[in-house]
Length: 256
Image (cartoon, rainbow, N blue to C red; front, side):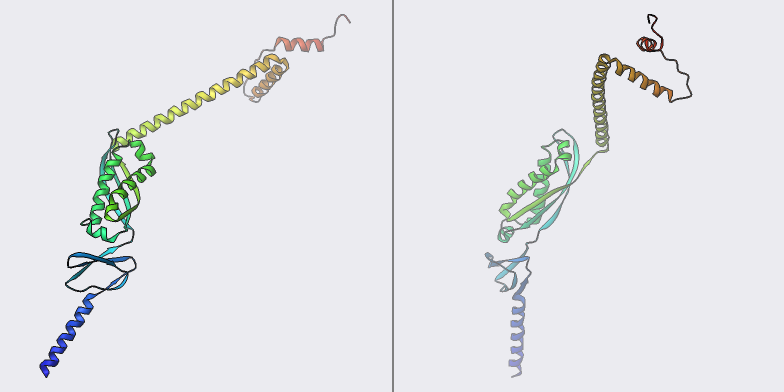
C-alpha cells in the first residue's frame, strides 16, 4: 500500500512537471514558431499556449521595431575620397515563420547586409553628395535593404546616416575650398555693386548735364558737406556761369 501511494505521488509530480513545462506565456509583441518533430507546425501567440515537451519545440520571435547600430565602415567615394561612415537601421519582423526558417540568424544577417549595402551605395556617390544629400542616400539604402530582407520576413522602415568622418587633411582642404568660394562670391557681389553704382552715376551725370540748376544745387551741397569740418582751410573754384549769373543780378545795367 505504501509503495502504491509512493508511486502515485511520483506520477502526480511527473504529470505536474509535464504540464508546467508545456505551458508558455507569450507577450503581446511576441510570437512562437512551433515545430512538431522537427517540421514547422504553426505560429502561436500571444497569450497562453501549450507546447508538448519532447515532440514539440518553440522559438520566440520579437515583433517590435529593432534599432540596429551599423558599425563604422571605410568607404571610398566616387571622387576617391576616403571617409568613415556609420548608420542606424530600424527594422521589424513581419513574418515570424520566414524569420526563423529562411535564415539562420536574421539579426546577424541584417547587420551584415546593412554594412555591405552602406559601402556599396555610398561608394557610388561623391563626397559633396554624402554631405548634402543624406535624405536621398538614406532612402536609397532603405529601399535596397527592404527589398533584400523581404524574403526573410523583415521590413526595414528607416535608415539614417549618423556620421561622415573625414581625415584632418581633407577637412583642411574643404575649409580652404569653402573660404575660396566665399571670397569669390564676395568679389562677384562687389563687382555687381560697382556696376550698378556706375549705372546710377551715369544717370545722375546725364541729369546734371541736362539741368544746370541741379548742378548748382549739387555744388552747394558738396560745399556744405566740406564746410562741416572746421579744422581745414578750403579753397574752391567758383563756376564762371554762377559768377556771371550773380553779376547780372548785383551790378546795375549801364544802359539803363
